[in-house]
Length: 374
Image (cartoon, rainbow, N blue to C red; front, side, top):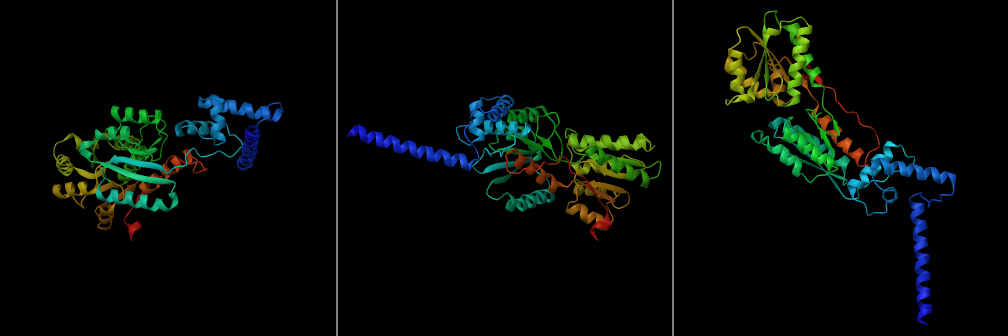
């Protein structure tokens, strides 16, 4: 009787397992492979290609593509990335069933830029829904060295980074990407790191645009001060290089361009700007390649030049808007911060299988004059 009872139990369990297996196959639109069938041999070859490209075994590929579990998320994403690259003609699963965490890590911006970032994050929440949490981590400017530590220690699934191009930052990003955490840079690129993408503007062209306008506005002997914060940030160095390049191409006198790097001085930024203006005999313009508009405004007021010389700024923040309306700023070049953050998030959503469309890398900069705001 006991033997008969166990046979009945085993038979019943076998039937239930087979029914469950058939339901899974129907749900996944997948059937067990018959390797004697030529068509299935092609499928097996494709799976081998995926395994080879992802650097895993065939059984791991089978587990990932058929959602059988037992594979770490980092391995699963490698398999799915390989399948995408090979353009497999089948629906690809998402390796993540839990809520993903994306994080913005950057030096604390001024209050106006911080408001733009916070507003952008809030606007993205309805679209992200329960699938993604988007966090922000701002570090004081005086602790810029701590940026590398924040990147390295982050537990998030993906990072949006704005940082100077230092050896510690490069090493931290290399370590995160090697562990399977994608990094997208905004505002300033870090091409010497294995980041997934850069979604900012072309700063070289932005600097060229500033030179183009000032070359048309200024007298031939007028001098221009380029106000920078820290040339360790690639975006500032590229803006300066673009300005000098276009300035020379337009036939303007290269000696009429002076550069002040405020971070190299112990004095406040606005004092560095004011002192540099006073040292120029025939100052005609200030181009702020990286110093906040409110600090340049303080410097111009201190030097007695506010509203008297041309002023080209970056970022359409509240100060820049006020100065435009008061005719104290000539032109503002805005780098579209909101679109940069949205693009960075879209890159991650596509990476993690939450979005299918391809994502453009760069964003265009925008030019604003007083009439834009009236």
